[in-house]
Every structure is written in structure tokens, then in C-alpha cells.
Length: 592
Image (tube, rainbow, N blue to C red; front, side, top):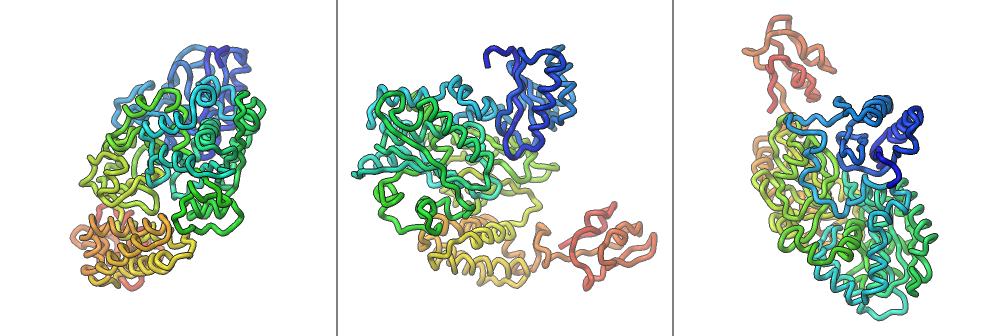
């Protein structure tokens, strides 16, 4: 890349549409001005700032253009590339009005370790990865470190598993190494099934070699010669880039037999999953790899003792592996300077929901929830009030606004009834009903339950049925006590981690939003106006001006009245769609 004086980096993740056409148009415009030998267009991966994509970053100028369309290519080339003039209309427009082209608030407080190369290199060229310290960690390990040296460095770093439970990574590697066997395996869990989560997917699409290299290092550390990446077949771009990366690494002798002439052998293959959420659980995953049903096994024995094909197996997720090479190169002491006391390093979150800036953020462990929402996230949309954040995917808890200054790390989240999970973070505002939110997440886990154990198969379904009654106005106060009691029983008795954590959305919302549950049960009212069967619309005659807008927008003609006179709603005909409430120009319609 060094022979070019300028690079135009185009975000090229699967979630960013239209990027191929932008790349082609930029190349065509550059060719027209005879600068193809000086300016290179690179299709990278997700840049993280999804809400403003497609993004084009001009390097080394460090100028970022957002919401780029193919027809913008001509102006970007003619003005910026040729004349050095910034195309102002394609810069990020900060709602606060205080951002410059080099300082987009979304990126300001991020610390990129796992995402260090995403959006920076061409993920389909191993040369780009090598130019950015790629495979140096593997070389260091194979030529100057023993197995125990590697494990001790990872242990000392404080790296914890980024897939959910936060188990110390080095300790897990040590257990696998100590298990005696003629065959051992390394598995990368890339079965990212949380709704709205795409952290691991982005790493695989944007920096696949970082995972391959880390798996080799883990294989060397525990004495394994074979690795498996379990990835969803519904991530075709990630699958293709992994296949390309594996082939490139094998061609250069960085995978396969006698790696770097050291006598160490390690191969990696892909195993495609069919999208079952339960296969994110490690024992279910192994059953799926072996061709069986995705059902969990009883533990112990743990995978480190008896895993894939009953052989000792080490399993980490994508983001965990993405942290390994920087630790080996820069040292455990460096990594320990980042993060909080008990949670070292960074965490990648898929920030979604009611924030202005939706996307991927990587922050130091211990970063306050407020900073994630209002700095990187740009605040709540439409000036609404922050109400809650749901972390940890469908099995995570809901964090109320009173904890907005909570430092986000493993222990802090667990202490308030939530969890880190793989890194989903859904932001909710004042218009969200927390009872309905709990029902939504529980519906997902009920559908995705493998059905093997009774607490999950029947218990969680019972929780969902109770929530269904409550949101219809049929609940009782006794139901609230039963929700809490049954939720705790499921947590204690379910077979695997997914079943055990499924009640979290219910228990956390009961704990922090109990008044909302009482409103549904006692007042038969949904304060947020989300539970349709509890809605009641009324026109205030003292405010209504008889403009007829509500009647014209009612799809079932249940509003009557003459022009310039107060109108009325026929509650028997009303389907509670909310069209009248939304369209009324004088806010004469209330709901309750």
C-alpha cells in the first residue's frame, strides 16, 4: 500500500449496501484523471459507524465522508483527490453542531484492539494483514516461547472470555493443556445469534487472519494440531473471507504442516451452523459439529477434559481470539493498563435501539453507560428520555436510568442482575414498555430452546404465558410473585447457561420497573402505550377543533363528528392503531 500517495477506504461489510458500486465509481473517476498509479481504492470492512454508512475514509488525510452514494464519487475525486478540497456536504453533521471532519464523536473515546484492523485493511489480502504486524505474534510464540510461557502471558493479561460468562482465558487454556490425550482441538465459536449483534461477524469480515493466527497460538499452547471455526451459514461474506484467508495462510506456510519451519502443525476447517441460538452454548456447538442435534451436555466433564469427539477441547469466541495477538506482541502488562480492576482490556458492543448513532463501538472495560449512550451513541433519538439499556442479548437484564453512571464490566453488570454476554446493547426510551420488552425477549428464548431440560422447555414457556396475560390486562398480583419465584427456579435448575439466564429480562424488569407491572395488573393500563389491548383513546372536547384530520386517517371509520365541532371515538370499533393520536395537530387525543 505504501506506493500510493492516497487511499480511499470504502466500508465493505455485509450490512453496508451499495459499497461495490461506490468502489467501482471511485475507480472509474480516478482512472479518468489518470491517477490510478497514485490513488488506491480499497474495499475494507465495517467501519462501525453503521448509522452513517456507506463511509469513505480518505487516508492519510483522515477525512471521513458519510452516507456516500455512487454519484458522489465524481465530486470526491475531482475536489478532494485532485484539488485537495474537502467535500463539505458529505461530512458528518453532528446534531450538537460541534464536530469537525477529523473528530467524529462516535470514534473519540473508542480504544480499538479487537477491531484494530477493521475498516483499515483489505480483509481479502494477507499482505495487508502482514503489513500491520500480522503473524508476528505467531512467529514470536513458535521461536521464543514455550507452551507455559504463552499460557502464563495470557493469564497475566487478565483476558476474560468475550462470549458471555467472562471466564479467564488463560486458565481455560491451562486446563486444556493439562489434559492428557493423543488428540486435542481448538474451536472458535462464531455462532453469534443474539438479535441485533454483529461484533464477531464484523471481525471475521474485516480481519479474518487475526482469528486464524490466534487459534494457531492457542493450538500451540495446549498441544492441539487442529482447529474448527463454527460459523453460521447465514453469514456468507464472513464464510467466504475465512475460506480466502485460510487458503492464503496455507499457501505462505502459516497454516498446515511445519509452520514457519518450526515443526508445529496446525490446520483449520469451517463448520457451518444452521442458525440455532442454543448452538452458541459450547457443548451444543460441539454436538452440532459432530453432526448431532444442537443440545447441551451435562457438565462436568468440561470440554477441556472431554470435548469434541470426546477429546480435550478449548473453545473461545471470535472477539476473545482477536485480543490474543496484541497481548503476545505488546505484553500482558500493556493489556492490564486498559480496562477496570477485574475486567481488563476492551469490549465491543453492538449499540442499537433508540440512540442517534447505531453501530459497533469498542471501549475500555469500566466505561460508563452514560458515555456510551451520549458520547459515542450521540444521545437518545428525538430528544426522548433514556429509560433502560438491555445488555447481554436475549438472556441479559435491563439496566434502568438510575444506573446510567454504572461502569460497564463483567462484575458490575452481574451485580445489578444483567450480564455482559457477547456484547449486544439495546437502548430504550420513555416510549418503551418494559413488560412488553421482557415478553419480547422471552418469546425469542422460548422459540430457540432445544427442549432438552424441563425448566427451560416448560418453565420459560410458562413465564411467557403469564406475561402474555399481563399485557392483555388479564394478570393478577399473584402472577407477579409467581414470575419471580419461577424465574429463580429456572435460573437454578436449567441444564445450560442459555436456559439459566433466560429469565433475566423478566427478573430485572420486575426488580427495577415493578410499578409498570402494577399498572398493567391493577390499573389495566400500559403507561408507555405499547400494549395494544390495554390502550384506550379519548378525544378531549375542550381541545378538539373539529378539523376532521383524525377521522380522515382512521382506517376503520370509528371517529364521528361535524367540522369545527368536537369529535368522538367509538370504542367498540376502535382497533387501537394510534393513527388518530399521531395525526391530531392540536394533541386533543389522549391514550391511557
